[in-house]
Structure formats: C-alpha cells, structure tokens
Length: 173
Image (cartoon, rainbow, N blue to C red; front, side, top):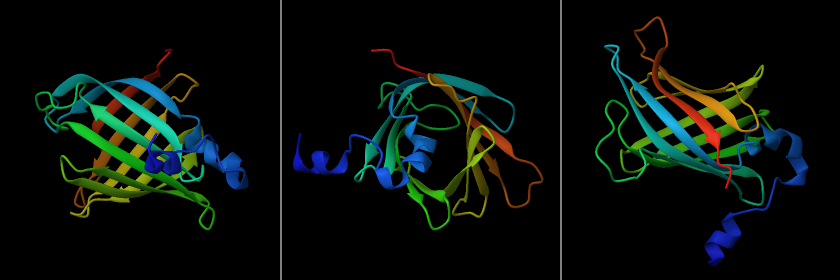
C-alpha cells in the first residue's frame, strides 16, 4: 500500500465520536446495487452497479465510491448518466450533523449536503448550482441492505421528484 493510501484509510471509527460515526459507519464494506433512474415523463431505466464504503482520515470520516453502471466506461446510463464518483462524509460535532461532499468528475457533478438521522432513516439535504433543492435519503436500512433515494425539487416546483433509486445488498465474499 502506498503512503497516501495508508494515511487516508483507517481501521475503524475514531473513538472521540465513535457512536455518532456509526450513522454512516454501518455501511463500511462492499455492496452490489440495482439502480433505477426515473425520467420526468415517467420512463424508467435500470442497471447494476457497485458501492464501496470505508473509514478514512483517522476514522473521522467515511468515504465511498459509487460506480454505476458496472462496468464503468460502458454505454451511457439513460437519465442519470454513468457515475464514477466519491462521497466524503465527515461528522461535525459543532452542528451534530454530517458535512457531505459528492464528487463525480466524469459528469462534472459536485454536491454539498448536510446529513442527519431522521427516525430510522438518514436524510441529506443540499442545493444544486441552479438553486434546486436536493434530498438524498438512506431508507429501509438493515445490516445487509439499504434503499437510497435521490430526489430533486426545482425552485418553482411544489413537490419532490424521485430521480434515482438504488437498492443495495452487502456482498458476502
């Protein structure tokens, strides 16, 4: 392992905020995913993908990589496009929430959100460069599966619109 990889990765959560870090820490591992993109006109497209979560930065953050569709570099996934991006999720004790940054350089998509528990779910909220509201939620969370929803609410709209749904299952390697 290179020094960079060794210094980035961590073996587990930092003890200082270990309980709070488990909000996303429970996802650490490798996941297979089925992704459904939802068009504004009611069309749907489905593809398989993969997601990988790990502890980073002295166990003070969780980083993930989302690859959709698998294999990366395949034909364009309708509606949502191909994803090969990473999220850095950092717990901020000053606001008792998570600061979240998503980077997908292949599509030039970059998002900032704040994530918090919402009952049994996790809800992340932010805004696009165009001023549209974004809401990304982890729902139906178990030890071996979760449902992720990517929604948008344009500034002039009254309701949220589901853009992407992801059903993930933990790999049993």
